[in-house]
Amino acid sequence: MASRKLDMCSGPLLKKMIVYTVPIILTGMLQLLFNAADLIVVGNFRGNNSVAAVGATGAIINLLVNLFIGLSVGVSVVIAHGIGTGNDKDVSNAVHTAVPTAIATGIILTITGVLCSEFFLELMGTPKDVIKLSASYMKIYFLGVTANMVYNFGSAILRAAGDTVTPLIYLIVSGVLNVILNLFFVAVLSMNVEGVALATAVSQLLSAVLVMISLMKRTDACRFSFKKIKFHSRQLKKIIFIGLPAGIQGSLFSISNVLIQSSVNSFGSVVMSGNAASQNIEGFVYISMNSFQQTALNFTGQNYGAGKFDRIKKILGIDLVCVFAVGTILSMLVLFFGQPLLSFYINDSDQAIEYGLIRMKYILITYFLCGIMDVMTGMLRGIGSSAAPMLITILGVCGIRIAWIYTVFQSPEYHTIESIYLSYPISWAITFAVELTMFLLLLKKKKRHLLSLT
Image 1 (spheres, one colour):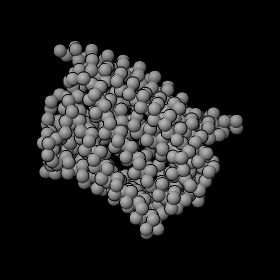
Image 2 (tube, rainbow, N blue to C red):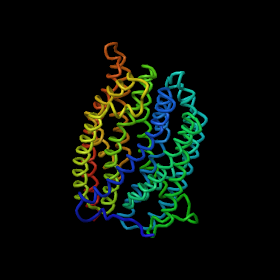
Image 3 (cartoon, one colour):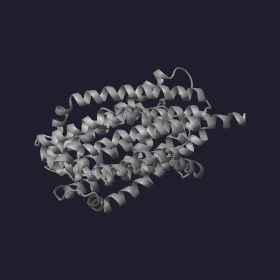
Image 4 (cartoon, rainbow, N blue to C red):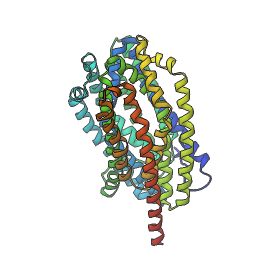
């Protein structure tokens, strides 16, 4: 089959960046929509406690999975740099290193998730009325996590090569299967959260198979062959050097969310339910903004490999404007339709819906700050700097939120759910400012270094 490509290193940027980003946005939205089906199905067929049970697992799952998903960021950057420099051998070696890395990390996650689910949930103070359901959901979810890793690593390869459409098509196919299986397991077979977890695992397996077939049919340097599968040390070191800090950043980011989730849990299952439903809805806005981070990473990566620093500055400007516009418009739409949207998830507790609306008001009005912060993370990684955004995020996002929980939140007058949500925009704004400054300094330094070699 003909390999889908996009020339990122020449010609007008705006149109190409939009063409590249829209399928990523649709992919993310569909993924969230299919994930939302889990909550909607159990909420309508099994009630408020089941929604709270699934919601309670999100922070822990992200904490574990993000550590290794970060390595797929390293795959994208290494392949993008190889394409930018025209080094097909480096690209091929990176592809054949990425696949076994995905499988190995998936196996580690499965063992950890299955054995430690209840332990992690107890650490978070998950209420007794939902902890058994949450543990059941997590164990089944982690049985299918290897397929999830293969899909994500495979998608990272395709996107680095300029193909964002293929991952979208495969997600649609697997997502439709997920919804059908959700209804079959829960509505027909009368299963609870175990049914939606099983549906997720099966659909992830399908998406992994499809993305591998796509890589095997490519005609460029990104083509995969099982005969060539191998851990190439040079590419593996680069992937780890860039990807591991990204993974640590994602996990530490999740640690702050775990702490916040634990604080939310202290208010009971009704607040947990409203928080989980609102968080899932907000995810549609977040994934749209975060798509521009992937655009920033891969466009910057290829142009950095080609030594085109002036285009990198243009990429930054376009991405910031786009993410601000998309984030603001979608946030206001979700906020306006907040109550009917929440009612799709929760139909047995008006109080839970009210708590969901409280979260929306505090998060969505300033959500664009999260988007522009993520763009800066993508820009920094695109120029090969992964340690800097990791350290900045640890201090700017994790540090501020953790400090907030242990100081401001502990004060009786601020020991409220509103106080927890207020820590989000403060951490986003500070982190963005620091990342922007760091990026401009590093770009200038790397440009001087390149000129000194010519």
